[in-house]
Length: 256
Length: 254
Image 1 (cartoon, one colour):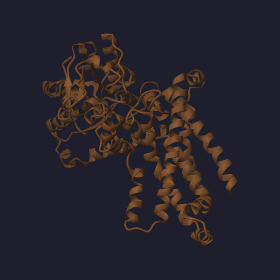
Image 2 (cartoon, chains in turn yellow, red; image 1 turned 180 degrees about the vertical axis):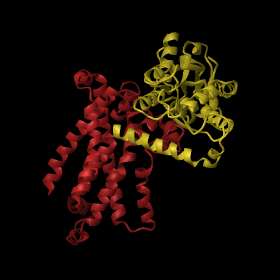
Image 3 (cartoon, rainbow over the protein chains, first blue to last red; image 1 turned 90 degrees about the vertical axis):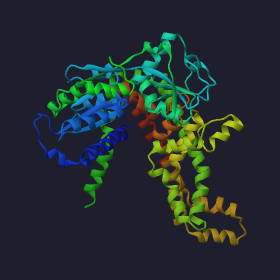
Image 4 (cartoon, rainbow over the protein chains, first blue to last red; image 1 turned 135 degrees about the horizontal axis):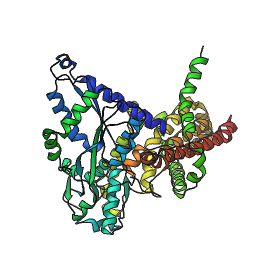
C-alpha cells in the first residue's frame, strides 16, 4: 500500500511538473522590475483547488515571467510531504492542526474560514430538511471520515446539537463525499459551503443554524526551506491582498 | 549477464518492503495490533477477497474458455475489452460501477425500484468492486493455459463419447489446472489489495466496507505508524496465504 501511495505521489509530482513546463516558457524571458522570478511551488488543500488555480493565474499575470505550480491534496498528506522534504514554497492548509505538523515555516496567517453545509442531490429526492435527517437509518448518508478536517468539523457539529448520525459511508475527503451526492448515491452529505457553491449545477445546499459551531480556519505560511523565498512571500501577500480576498469571497469563503 | 538486472529487479521490488519494516513502531506494535478495528478490517478483507475470487472463477473460467475456444467475429476486440479493468485507474472503475450499479445507475436504478436493493455502501458492493478489478488477471492466465493446452485430448474424449460438459470437467480443467491456480492466486492477491474501486463504489464504513487498504489509507491521514502496522499485517497475511497455496497446489501438480 505504501508502495502504491508513493508511486501515486510520484505520478502526481510528474504530472504537476509536466503541467508547469507546458506553460509558455517564453514569458519567463521578459524579466522586469519586480524581484520575483522563477517558479513558485504552492502546496494547497484540495478544497482550495478552484480558487487557488484562479489566484495562481492572476498572480502570473501580475508578475510576468513567474510560474505558479500547485500540488492540491488533503492537508495532512501535504503536511507529511513537506516534512519529508518536498520542495514547496508555500503551504495553505484546511486546518490549523495540519499547519502545526509542519515544522520549518514562517508565521502562519489565517486567510479564510469555511463552514459546513448540507449537500443534497438536485431536487432533494430524499426530502432532507436538516441535521435530524442524518439520524434516519433509511436515508443514505455520507460524512467525511474522522481523520480528515471535514470529518472533524462534522463531529463537532453533531456533538453540539446532540445528535448521533447514521452514515452509510465515511468518505476519505470532502470531494469524495460531494461526488456521492452529485451522483445521487446518497440523500445527503455534510460538506463545505464552498463545495456546494462550486458544484451548484449538480447539488443543492441546505444551510443549518449550527454550522457556526464548527468554523474551519485556513492558515497559509511560507516555508523556511522554500527554494524560492521571494516568490513564496509575494504569493502569500497576493492571497492576503484585496484582490485575493475578492476571489476567495466569490467562491464562498468567509473572511477570518 | 542476466544476474545483475535480475538482482536489481529483486531489490527494486523488495526495498519498499524493507522500508516498511524499518519504519515499523516495533515497541508499540503488539498494543496497536490487538485492536478490534484491525481484526474487523482484516476479516472483512479476507472474506471479500475470497468471495470476489469465487465470483471471478465462476464467471472468468467460462469467459476464458469462450475467448480461447470460441469462433466468433470480433473476438480480438472482446479480448482487448476484457483487459480494460487492468488499464483503467481503479477509481475510474469505481465511478463506472456507480454509473451502472449505483442507485441512479443504468441497472442499479431498477434494482432499487424493484427489489429495494442497492449495492453501494454494502459488503456485496466491495465484492463486486474487487471482482471487477481482479477478474482480468484470472481470465488472462486461464485463457493462456487453454491456448497452450492440446485440444486433441478434448477431441479424443469427444470421440469416446464424452459430452462437452464432461470433457470440460474431466479433461480440459485438469490440463489447465496450473493456469487456473496461478490466475486464482493473482486474482485473490489483487482483490485483497484493491483500494480505488472499493472506496469509490462501496464507500468506507467500519465493519461493512472498510477493508485493510482503506484502513491503511485513512490511518495515513492521522497516524503513519498505525498505517505501517496495518500494512505489515496485510503483507504478512498475504505472504502466508500465497506461500502456503503455492506449496500445496502448484507443488502437488508438478
